[in-house]
Amino acid sequence: MAVSLQIENLTKSVGDRMLFADVTFGVNEGDKIGIIAKNGTGKTTMLRCIAGKEASDSGKVTLRSGLRIGMLEQVIEFPSGITVEEAAKPDPDAPEGTGERTVVLLTQMGVTDMQARVDNLSGGQKKRIALARLIASEPDILILDEPTNHLDISTIEWLEQRLQRSRSTLLMVTHDRYFLDRVCRTIIEIDFEQAFIYHGNYDNYLRRREERINAMTQEQAKIKNTLRREQEWMNRQPQARAGKAQYRIDAFYDLKERSKVNLSQQNVSLNVNSTYIGNKIFEAEHISKSFGDKKIVGDFSYIFARYEKVGIVGPNGVGKSTFIKMLQGIIAPDSGRWDVGETVRFGYYSQNGISLPEGKKVIDAVRDLAEDIVVNEGMHFSPMQFLQHFLFTPKDQQKEISKLSGGERARLHLATVLMRSPNFLILDEPTNDLDIVTLGILEQYLADFKGCVLVISHDRFFLDSIVDHLFVFEGEGVIRDFPGNYSEYRAFAAEKARNQSAATEAKSQPKTERPKKERPQKLTFKERMELEQLEIELEKLNTEKAELEALFASGNTAADIGEKSLRFSELCEILDEKEMRWLELSEKS
Image (tube, rainbow, N blue to C red; front, side):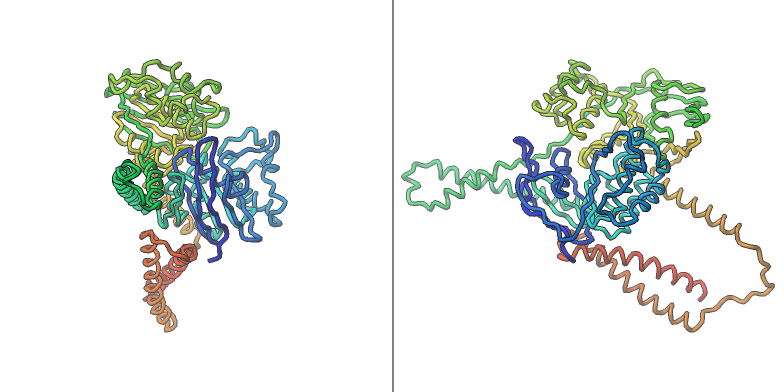
């Protein structure tokens, strides 16, 4: 497989902080690579350097002659005052007819008003326009920075399926683990300023990463033991070392430098318990809400139980955020009432982010909220101590809020919510801008949380990890209570759609009288031969597929891994087709 892109010794620092150093890897034609790392380690910067939108300190990015790169930025910006139609116009070097393809893609993603002003659009709608424009321009290499942020689940699944089928070369940063697992066959992790490459799925990455950390920890222990011995030798009088080889002295200083690597994992600490919550949580009685002709909630009633964890799903704009704001009294319903228990203490993580003064320093903004933070029924923290649990060093605490990155803002928002020890958490899109490591910590915290949780999220893995059941917003004020997680709901909805389709097709078929005696249809000689051949082919294809799955799961590096990934996709399509034909013939035999 031809190399499309080669990254050699790429190095980048910001001020006195090194993001990554001497990063080297190649991207083959057809590769689908996911890049993951903690917030602040330079994922976005690396993508921008590779795409030529930002200069690196040193190193080289070589693009094969004639290839075009297209990049989706994490923050989508369009000139003020333009329409959707104008924003969707392709680049001058895009293939002919790209404009008409863009419109088709936008329609598939639910954007239909081409004359709407982009200034009035949500972040998710802007993301759709940028995605449609990029995909339609058919670049040879797609670089996507957090492509699922601010998209609803149906659009994420649409994009996921499109990228699965696509033969484009792909390099992306994402925190969506299902999306990562289903689209990418290679994961590159930026850690300790280096790039570590893993072939296979996300579970394989987690296993191999743990092995790598353990091996590095053992190696570090050996280095320190050797350094201790060599330090004793170096501490002797110069006469005792006279005549010794210079290489040993040089090796000592090299060991000393290597021993400085800090392998400790700095993670967000969510060691904050909820306050006591009584048996009465809240009751919703015949709640209704509309904005003009648009019905958001229609006659909704529900009794919330202690320790319930509920996910809220539905298309963007259907009223999910309005619903949770009504629950807290931020927005009044048109009719009906909420009856909230006396012990309930809400903690609200808003999709709009932190509502703190942009010009204030982080530490000053938190001090304005509380000089003494009391959590876990008696544990006292100063604002400085509490912020360190959320990875804000004393230096970071002096930053102005306006200068924080998306990940830092998300962590600060989470800190301000949990510092009040709530017993009913309401989370509106909490996964945006949080890295995969922090997401895992938050998931575990919520799974163990001794209180109630109501969460709106487009992250299917996140929902599957924590919720007991779902409120499904179907539009026109309809809210269904589904008893299961998102994957179970998706399987249910797909089965329901298949049944409805089959029923519709059956109704459309003209009724014909069957003969009184109908002989069963038999296989012809040619069909029997085809069936026998299919059984031989299916056995070979399934064997080949199993071998590739074993290779991907092993994590072993193969020179032609990109080619094998493409072959795996082809095998899945061929098997689907041949198995369907085998079933047709088997029913006749």
